[in-house]
Image 1 (cartoon, rainbow, N blue to C red):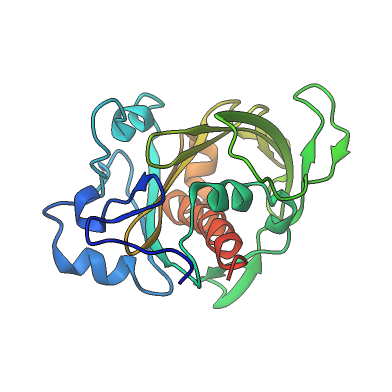
Image 2 (tube, rainbow, N blue to C red):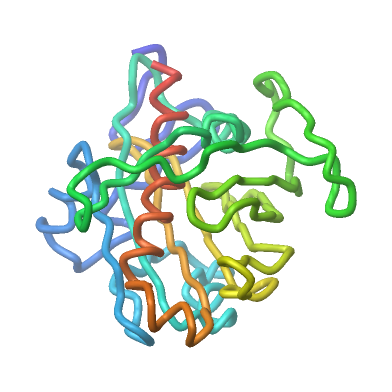
Length: 254
């Protein structure tokens, strides 16, 4: 490896925590699935509490940050991406989040159809919330900004064009990536998710063992959609695509 990692878990000027620092008391079962190639993705039933809450330290309460949105349905996911020939950093995670166009063509496993299904037929950055002109992804960054907001358009296979605001912020050890729809999401002529009622959050942190990706996606949906669609499964499928998008972006650094 390119960096020397001491027993204390540090390289350069950055201190690396371990998996059990963030998930004390969860035991080896969680570690096994988190360190597997697929990670762990779980759909929650309506108003079921989250099962995985990382202990990130004072001033960073992800649970409250998620629950203040009051999502009726949630899915959560976790994986630790192994370090390749060097230690992954927060800058690597930032660059993975910047690959918006890589969302195009990603698939999820449809158990009902017993096949892989493409979720987003197109994905692009937008100039702003009010200007829909597509702009390219920037080149890989060499410095980590303290925060950033971008707007993206995704052409969903089921819902057509959907529009999202994404906010990225830096914490002492990791990055927080938040995403919410800034326009209604519709199916046929019906609004199924109102503006701001879809919310996803991914937290990434370089650990001693690899790059942690912890993700939660949630939505408050219309009764019309809930009567027609398995909402927990649908959110888990979409959450898995975003989860794998970042996972893939990190593995491109190998």
